[in-house]
Length: 182
Image (tube, rainbow, N blue to C red):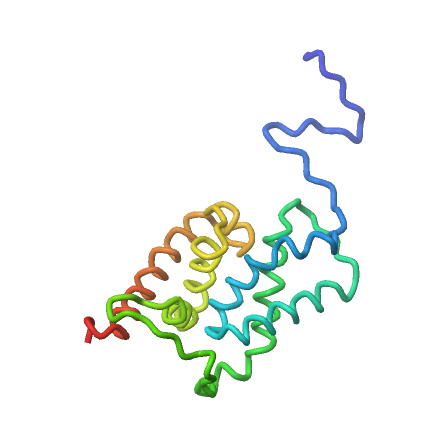
């Protein structure tokens, strides 16, 4: 018999970390995540203006009522909220061809050999959703593979595969668009 004494309701957990206590999402901490969310939104939408609107709409949805988080990963929660807002907002638009009026602010001068961030974001936005989400989480937001897996609710090995395929898709799309790739 070991020296540990357990009460009837308490069972020792072998090798398990204690579950973090739920905590309230602090609205004052949201501005810290605007840059990450904007980059993710831009990659989802493919447009700077739509990305700004998506981030604002996400914040409105999150701030409608108090949000209790089960783990300390605020950015993971906010990225899921952003993706859910995007899916709700663009579900019907996904079946229609994407049309957008070009504005003067969209015209950027560039050198022949460079690929603009607009083309990169457009290529990411055109990727299949599961690949796009992995590329956004790891390459744009800067999450580790483990954090990305947790926020996308999948396994780390799945993130690795989706990230590889997503990067391949983006590279192929950029090669098709570049003058040298034609």
